Amino acid sequence: MKLKIIHETSYRYDQPVRGLVQSLRLTPSAHEGQRVGDWSIAVTDGERGAAFRDGAGDWIEAWTVRGPVDEVTVTISGLIETRDTAGVLRGHRETINPLVYLRDTALTKPDAALRELAQSVSGEDALDLAHKLAAAVSEAIAYVPGVTESVTTAAEALALGQGVCQDHAHALIACAHVHGMPARYVSGYLHSNADGTPHDAAHAWAEIHVGSLGWVGFDAANACCPDDRYVRLGSGYDAQDAAPVRGTTFGSGEESLDVRVQVEEMEQEQ
Image (cartoon, rainbow, N blue to C red; front, side, top):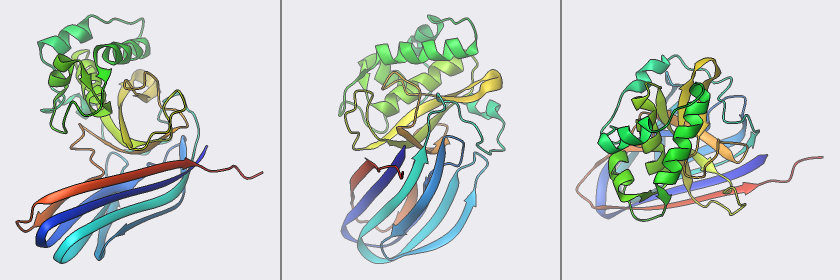
C-alpha cells in the first residue's frame, strides 16, 4: 500500500515565549514492512540540529526555535510504501537487548487486577500467549475516546473498562510483563480501521518479543496485528518515552495544542 501522510502539530502560547527545543521522532522506521519515499519535517522558524539513530533503531532530530514566538507548527509530509508482515518486525536494525523492555514504568506497572487478567490467560507457546493476552485486553477495555488522559495508567484504564489505543497498549505491555515477556509501546499512523473507516489521528500499539520471531506487533484497540494499513514511527517503554514530539519551552506562556493527521492511500503505478 502506498500512503501519503500529512501531520501538523501547532503549539500556541497566550504570551510569547523565549524559545523552545524539541526532539522529534517523526521519521518512519526502516524495516521490511515499510519503505520511506519522500519525507520532510519542517518547524516554523526552526533550526535543525543534530540527528541520529538511537539504539532502538529510531531516527531522532533536534530542532531549536528562537523567540520571542507565540506559535510554532511542526509539519510532517511524505510518502511511504507498506506491506503486510503479519505484525512481525523484520529487518529493523537495533542494538538494545530486548530484555530491557521488561522494565515497568508508572504508566505500565501492573496492579493486582492487571496481574489477575494476565494470569487468567495461558497459551500453547509464546506467540499464542501473546495473541490471547491482546484479546483479553481488547475485551477488558472498550474503545471509548475522551474518557482517559495522557497520564492515565494501564491500571486506571482497566478499572474504568474504557480507553483509547494508548490505554490498550499500556495494559498489554503490563500483562506481557507479568508473564516475563519483553514488551514496548509503538507510535505511528493508521490508514483505516478494520471496517474501512478512515482513521484521522495518530495511533499506537504494543510490540511483544516472541522467541525466535522477535518483535511482533499487537493492536488490542482494533483486535488485530499491524498490517499494511499501519505506519511505524518509533518505540519506547510507554507513551511518554515513545512520544513523536518531546521538548522544552522557555517562558511562562500557557500552551495550547492542535493536531491534524491525514493518511491517504495513493494510486499504485501501473
